[in-house]
Image (cartoon, one colour):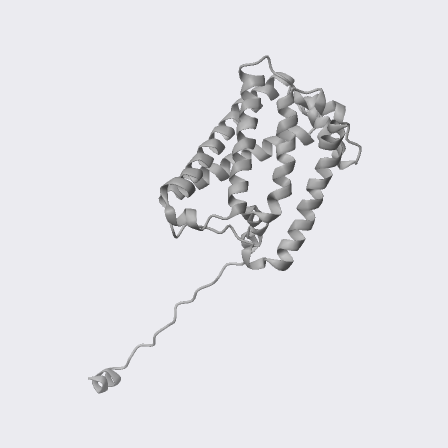
Length: 238
């Protein structure tokens, strides 16, 4: 019963909150649709933590999308056997995870330890977001270390990935993810929670990336030509 709730019903509840929450936020809180940047309050720690966090998160998300959405048969057809896939996942995924952890630690220290001014402007949703991110990242790193580095290894593409793709056709089979180690189920539930609180946090700024800027035409600057002043005019000015 609980398996059906967490892995059949709960993901759709979180997606519904995600969609409705964004619509509500956009209609009623457009001025709050920002990163709420605190760079003007402190920039030294931010200059280190922000790039590590964002690049780490980008590669981690890309790895999740590739591992969950691309069937195992497709990667094999492309010439990537299971051993190669495992090594790519372990080395690149671990490097991305380390960057994400380092960036998160720096940002947390910056916000809650080093600067009283930043702590004052921290909202309740910021606390919730940081707490959930820390737990989710910890579980994800522990999952990789315990199963693929220290443990015997586990190929989630035959269970967790299949369950994830079934969500898109509205036919998720909870038994698939229940066959995986428990840490994968916990990771999936935390991921759903992160999707649910997304619209109410600073994460909404992801949808405001100025992509159109890349296609913006060049701004042409013309130097104003100053005509030569005749000798008579120069003498009159004197």
